[in-house]
Image (cartoon, rainbow, N blue to C red; front, top):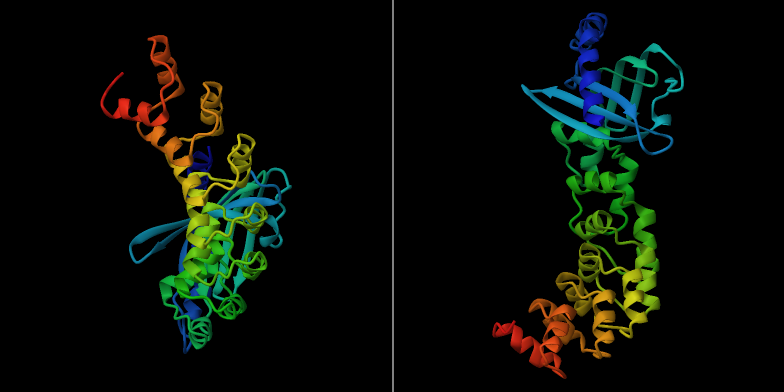
Length: 325
């Protein structure tokens, strides 16, 4: 649905291209005579409704050096100063988004709060120098993306002050995309995690490792490291799932075994069925082996129906390995 809306607005946007270029041409020609001139980049923009209250979906399609690139994300509606998204019908709009890295000057129209138009990006000629001075080199391509993601000089200084390893210009952009900031880092450290790897902070955000998750695990007696936390989130070994296992009698199982549980399909429901068949508390390694070799409750019941009773888990696993069905 969003793609159809975006394509529709691009078609509408093409109708205003000649008008905008005609009216903006004198300004950009005059800029060309300046002593120091940063290249103006341009493209199309669209605005559409977002599923998140208070935000709009803002898309930028840039045309540069014979190629195209696109950026699409939800922005706070307050970012578009002077734009009334509640106004019905069609309206012409002109708004400027100013960032440390440069300005996005946008013109076009909205119809019932959604629309399209053209943008011109004017880089801030001082930005690259200021960023380089604090250890973050910025080229022309990066500067445009850093403006869109609002990588400010102050933000760069804050991240520099966190004393992180593997921190570079690209990582600053990733931080802004995924929501890594000083508050997030401090919340993790407040839970006793001495994290300092920029790559792992991004991975935390991507996979959903939070301070609350760490707190819950510590309250349960665990002291996970960064890699274990990421693996737990990738495979779905959440504190809530761990609590379900506890209710089945599996309290404080080693975290690596819990991850193996998730990988191989050892679930609270699987354990409950085994307990119903008389296997009250199989060892975690036995549970993993059963799932690897497809020793299911149904298989055990089938063997019993054939008159084969009182098999140990090792015997059941061995039967599966040797193809006894």
